[in-house]
Length: 92
Image (cartoon, rainbow, N blue to C red; front, side):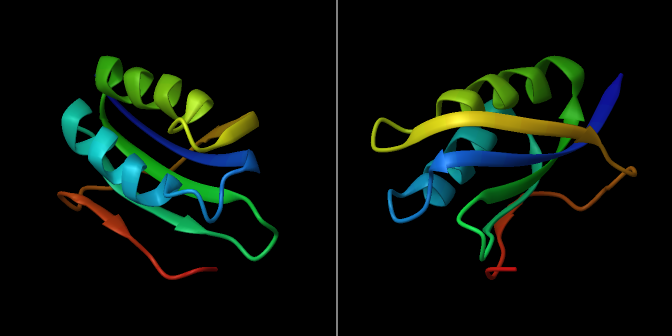
């Protein structure tokens, strides 16, 4: 099965290399989608891929890189997306 979800990551997640680390983690997990900073200080990501791969990426997002301090993540199901790769988007 393929899963598509949107994630908002809360905590100290900007200015710590979170997006760049997330891109590498997504590539390693085999997950497509994108990641971006939001003006409210959170990081938002959209993920799509095999269930197990998305679950691995969600677990990574809940921890983040060593430089981050994730307090919580919000996960919502999202419409199907089919764009390959994992991109860094401008701040929203």
